[in-house]
Length: 436
Image 1 (cartoon, rainbow, N blue to C red):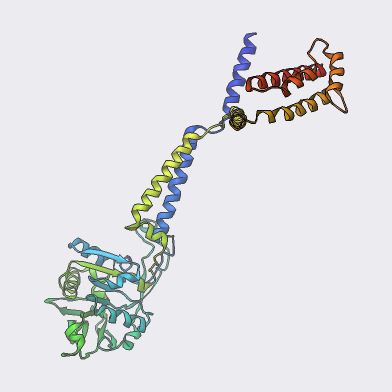
Image 2 (image 1 turned 120 degrees about the vertical axis):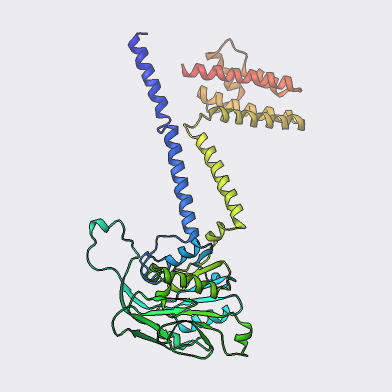
């Protein structure tokens, strides 16, 4: 064989080997790894409720960085050693720690009253009432400020107060009023051994009501923050956990915490409301950021987390085994031949054990007669007709009828096998002769 032929043959051989596996092992591993990580990330984000929902929630809450939000308060508490949790589930309303509620201007009074009444038996509560109408900042943002501006930043509109507060049951109900200083300068406040200015000239205050104790007031004695304690001698006064209402939210929101005095007041209010406990829970459900618990969420929480991790490990093992298996499928012809041979061997063993060797002769004779009849072109392939036809084609061979008689008279397994082999040899020679 020439060198060119050898080279061409080797190239064809390499090409055929490549055709059996179109992707390299590294490519397949990368595809499996990326797919697995993407699938696990999807499960995780579904479990924690982060499904890419609307991020422009304009309500005031503990994750909002807008002027009216309370992300600064949460960070301030963490910096001062508090354990802070932001609860997106209704079960968070049953915490034994200090619960901070930040209802919106459109909160339902009956639902909020039910929350406050349930809190009487669980733990202390601090309510920060809303004040500002807000909207997205108007105008274009300068290029130099584009990197600093966040999606939840807002522009403050007109100050207001929630009207639903008057619909709460006693001793929570109160009447609110909006006050603006005559000179247009910032309003002042004092309370809990601290004093300072509000960030604007507008302030919201609560009219004096029995069962409510003033904590922070303005220069005119109007109440900016109150402690609901109930009437002396009542069940609420004797047994229930008190509730603190911060009527003027600029004392504790991001807008207000820009001032050190107001930040110190916010810490003092938290300490007073929470009985000096160091754990605080911010509720997120009242502003529409709640989530419901589902089976996928539970799968990533104890005690189900252990089973989930085991399932993930099993998936990794199965995937790794599948990866090692990747490649062209091996020829299964040997397996098929082994299967047929084993089937024949098992059937023969069953017949030998049953002692029914004599039953094999007649079916095998009929099978060879049909084969020889087709090969010799006989319409009625009986032993005499087959002998006559074979005398013309294979005159030196032992007649077919004699071989049939020997198989019929075989009494032992060895004799039966030899007689059957003799018939099989004659059939093979006849078929070979007919093809030529």
